[in-house]
Length: 320
Image 1 (cartoon, rainbow, N blue to C red):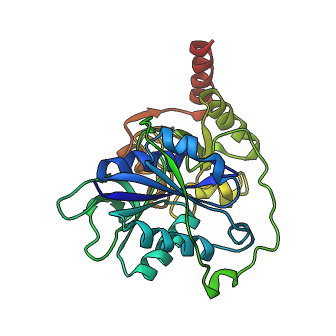
Image 2 (tube, rainbow, N blue to C red):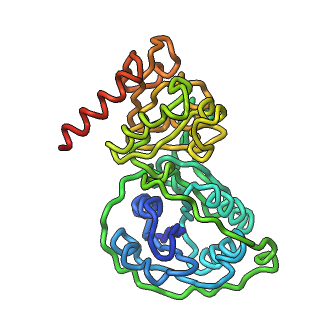
């Protein structure tokens, strides 16, 4: 069976959920071989093996932390040369897509970005994408070289599938461009205690209808009752009511959770482009003609200031 490279997104050895999802998808088309780079790689093997990695290629060097993406591209290029994989799967983050684009160019291959599903095909892996602001769904495959595919978070369920997970050192020679852009400083992101927006299984978002910064406490309370991340529409962000880092939409972040709750959001195409691939969509809006209702699985026509607190209390009651 052909091997499939999976780029490991981890923080000091703690493997992030999108990587575990990639391992589940990789098993559909071959045998997953994980590539773990940087500090803490020795701590990734157990989690990767538990979720299906037959092999873990590791390499640690200061370049991965001190410089931008080129060292990681060098390492993946070395892994492709060593393994000759059927495909390379990478999480569809901003960094992941840059790594994927550079790698595809290096190895002379085609690239597919923001896949939401992946299946084996007679002529190579077939990726499902949501395109043109999520108005259409396409099935695509790479026709030249080793497919390089980035996959959105929450595109597959995390599944335990114990495998050997044998650890092997990856030989990497850094290119001249590896040290071209140096990281001069880092600022830790302030933790809210909530899940990362792009990885969360549930997202609760507020829009113009929330009416102000102080009223986002209603949205946050519902999110906390569900263990969800908090999002915001562009209108809310532009008004200064919520941080830009929480914006969902074409010019913000793209999310694909199991459940998306939109409160006070009209459903403009800019916002829909960032959340339309959510598995179940619920909207609360007092305007029965709001475009968001054309998209939802469940809609509530009502004042969010009445509906959302009641929903929060009901969730707390059922949990209690």
